[in-house]
Image (cartoon, rainbow, N blue to C red; front, side, top):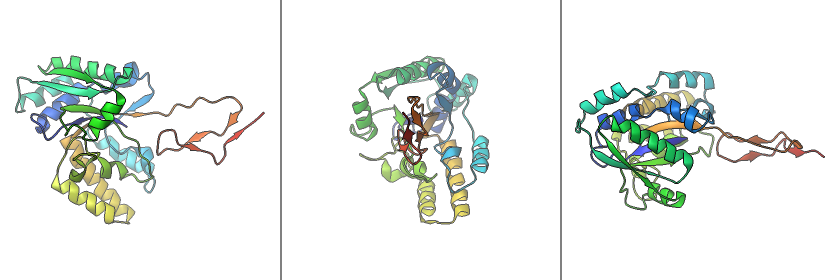
Length: 255
């Protein structure tokens, strides 16, 4: 999953109207078609349908479609900014690595935000530096930062429990938005202590309803795993949970 974290501990990103304005200004369809050449799917949630193992994939996917997708709408973006604490715009910056994709996405956002009176500067760093900043290595001294996250165990709540707890906002934590909501913390604790699938489903839906409305993260896309193999390789399959995890159960190479 690729996303942008808003630093909710800094002004004006502690204003949900600012976050929504910026989200609506980002054209995710252009990311999919023009920047990533359809190697990603547009996203709106930290949980995607194929990540659900204990629940009906179809039912969960149907629920996700009911969530706001923050599709590109510059007029809606202007309306949210007009309701914010900075209706006339402001200066800010975003951290990205030096890859062509993140640079192109940053430029896309920069151009869109100009229409809102928001002057976005792009802070290009190495990938190692970006990861260090993501982990709080500079005391969270950023406005926005590009992030990547991969599910590494088969539990649909894994991403929620990594990205949204207030306790993960400090150095070394994965809450790059420095997002803090006591109701979310309580629901995360309840979800972790439950072994009932129906109860967990209901709690996760409550969580997603809250965080999708409060948008600490701008969820952009779900990258696809592209696999190129020699014609002699048969049954090479990647696991769904983590990038580059190859399943060897049926794997074989012919002469």
